[in-house]
Image (cartoon, rainbow over all chains, first blue to last red; front, side, top):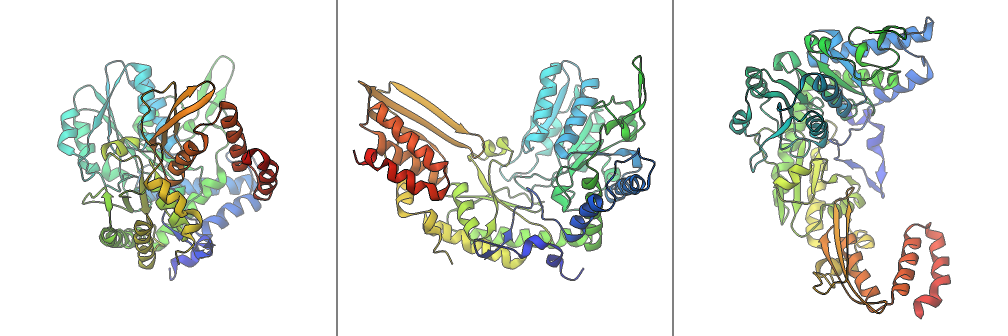
Amino acid sequence: MKNIRNEFVALSQTVYGKPLVYLDNAATSQKPKNVVEAVCDAYEKHCANVHRGVHRLSEIATSQFEKAREKVKNFIGAKHLEEIIFTRGTTESINLVASSYGRKNIVAGDEIIVSEMEHHSNIVPWQMLCEEKGAILRVAPISANGEFLFEEFVKLLNQKTKIVAVTHVSNALGTITPLKKIIEESHVYGAVVVVDGAQAVPHMRVNVAELDCDFYAFSAHKMYGPTGTGVLYGKKALLETMPPYQGGGDMIASVTFEKTTYAKLPHKFEAGTPNIAGVIGLGAAIDFMNEVGIDNIARIESELVKDADESISRVPGLRKIGTAKEKASVVSFVLEKVHPHDISSILDRQGIAIRAGHLCAQPVMKRFNVPALCRASFAVYNTKEEVDMLIKALIKVSEVF
Amino acid sequence: MFDDIHDLYQELILDHNAHPHHFGKLENATHFAKGHNPLCGDDVEIFLEIEDERIKDICFLGQGCAISKSSASIMTDEVIGKTLEEAKQIFRFFHLMLTTEDDLIDKIFWENQVYLQA
């Protein structure tokens, strides 16, 4: 692909008369033309419900929908097609596991481990489950650099540990966790591992079979796809033992008032009409990423992060938050005497979009003793010039205050 | 390139942010309220000393962006010494100003001149 930026119409616009510098990719990425076209076609050309209609449009919609499942399976290296469940996003994927696997398997006194750097969506569902079942939530700590403290995590594992819920890449710190080791060690104790992959899949090659994780959740919209669509990967053997998450159409084999039998995987977990255009759009997003090449994406982004991490130290009074050795896509920071929202507002007037706030990771804010932080996060279409503009603007902010 | 920063961040706001007025805790407070905005993480605590239906003293504590902090600071200047009814009137006017389309603000301002000058 010659010029990646040309594929993104949104990137050529101006904001307050300045060219848009979009550095809020960890919140959501912009969408390439092929994704927008795929979603548009799904509504304009073959809008029909899936898995039901015996007519041409429904056949096309169904075939494209199922083709997207195949693309996801290949993209993350799953062994079986029925291990790919479509959801509304990472949050729903994790809730599905907590609600279906969790409710069936967790009893009073069991333990669930989460890490200190989890997004709220990988904390709250487990807290709710613990509260309901009388189970105990344990927290694996992180270091002052924002590294996952593996040795400390291992100390928490025991025969009562039933679930380990951990992120692959921290949304607030960019830390890449030692997932393979975490999974291996958890399996020694018979715990299942649920991975929040929302910030990993957009940026690096992920292979769920090699990782040997039990569940892996991610969202389409952070990987150039539409909002409102996500994936839960689960090992077939586990998914088969799990009760349905929601009841309704599409998830049944037969229904009478006496007894309902459920559909086979993956439809057992996909009650109701899904986000058909969203799923088809996700398929197109995977096409885009494959065309650019996931290794190219990872290389381009890690150069940007390295560059930003180094040059941002020139900004007076700036403190970096999250300086792990293994990082992806994210550079987080605070400025002495300037609230993150002021930084973000001033940058916005320069056309630069970053995120400011608690980033849905309040325990991380507490860990680093900040009320909020600023986060610049990169995608494959960002440039070194944009990093320079960010640094220049930040230096100016430090001068104004 | 950066001239327009000052549209939003006027000296007034930067001054109040760096040196907020009535910032601290009021030992003789008769009234206290706490506000938290989960969306942006702002935390504000307000302490009031009310005597004979009048705001004798006011202080605030908290953290937030410059706009939030300077607003709180300016508010303390505005309401200190006012009667409760006057303070409520200021609040109603301010709230209206914030929630009204730009072109209507002038009109509201004009209609409220009488009160503000009083």
